[in-house]
Structures are given as C-alpha cells and as structure tokens.
Length: 292
Image: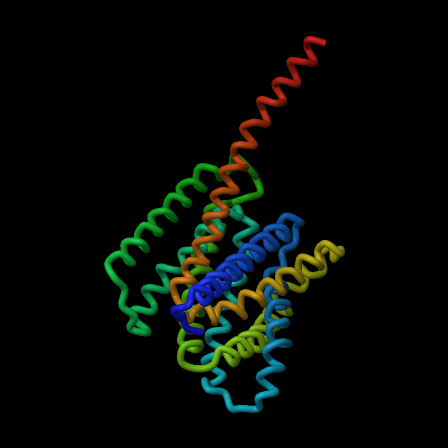
C-alpha cells in the first residue's frame, strides 16, 4: 500500500494508523483487567492470539499452496523473540500501571531506529535523532516518577520492576518489528502473519505446558474472564492484520505508537483531578453531618 496524491487515500492511511492505535489500546486495557482479576497467564493470552492468527492466515497460506519465500527457521527465530516480548509486556501489567507500561512501550521506536540503521542501512535525519532523544528523556522521567510511587498507591505493585520488564519487552519487539518490516517490504505480508501465528502458537503451547499449567488451573474461568481472553485475541488479530499495511508508510506506524500515550496522559490528568475533588466532597459531607 503506497501513499498517493488523493486526499482520501491519505485519510484512509490515517484511519489505518488509528485502528492500529485502537487495537493497541484494547490489548493494554484487557491485559490490565485480566491482571486486576488476579490471573497470571501471559503465555495463555499469547497462545489464543497466535491461535486466531494461525486459523485465519494459516488457512490462506495453505490455500495458496506455494513454497515459503523465507526459510521457516528465520520465522521461528523472529517468532521466539516476539513471544518473549509479549510475555514480558503482559507480565509488566502485574507490577506497574497501565499508563507507565504504555508510555515505556514507545521505547520500541529508538530500539528500532538503532537496529534498522545497522541491519537494514536505514538513514535518519538529525531531527529524527533529536526526537528519539527527547523520547528517551521522557521515558527517564516516567522511571523517576514510578520510583517515587512505589509504596504510595498499591502495596502489591512494584512499578520499577514492571518498568524493567516492559523495557526488555520493547527490545524484543524491536527485533520482531525490524524483521516484520523487512518481510513486508521485500517478501509477502500474508506469509509473515501466517507463520507468526502458526509458529507462535507452537512456541507458546510448548512453553505454557511446561511453565503455566498451575496458573491456568487457578484461573476462575468466568464469562467475564473468557470474554477478556477473546477480546485480547481479536484485538491482536486486528493489530497484526493492519500493522503490515501501515509499515509500508513508516511515519503512520510511529504516529500510531504516539496516539496511545497521548490518550493515556489525558486520561491520567483527568483521573488525578477527580481524585483531588473527592476528599473535598467528603469533607463537605462530614461537616454537614456534624451540623445536623
């Protein structure tokens, strides 16, 4: 998909970028909700998302009946890294807050710039490096903020540990994103997404059978919990479907990454103002009771 001169083509691409952003936001929200319900099944979450990809795009790949354009072991290497990144990111929600996790998730962009510079020979302008440096400075402020709130909001949270997990996850995402960009621009996006689903399902299936069986048994599989897992898989399907199209126009992919943190900042500012109003309201009610 290439940008053309017609305005409606540009609007359509922006719409695709917004869908990527929306699907990322849904995945973040659902993961946060699953964590708040006490479920620790990061591999199971990933398994269902890869399973849905395998069912949809694996069927298309089988229908084509053509030889793979890239050897399967290269796909396996990328998928293994992607799986570990997903598991680390999901685990981060157990220790940190949704705002911090999604802001730090943007650390993927500087990692991608470094990897594409050395692996694909991509050249960036001075101002792009300035933007990346500004991004890193902002992420440092997130870490500083979380270090001050370690014991003030929720004793069960360990924000700095969660932040470390999501930063490690972004490094894994950077590798998988660079590999995806190469495959999408030079090979076949359908083949990539299909192999991502098939091999991802196999890798997560093996790992969860070894490390997560007890956690699965401990989950209360209520209709709400089942709906959350399904919602995560559907949102992941939308993300994996649209992202290869957006990667044809890099700036939209980075714009999509930026939209989620901006929305979370607005949400957090409003949430803080509501919290500040609550004590004053309770104080007014208390004074009224004393008078009566």
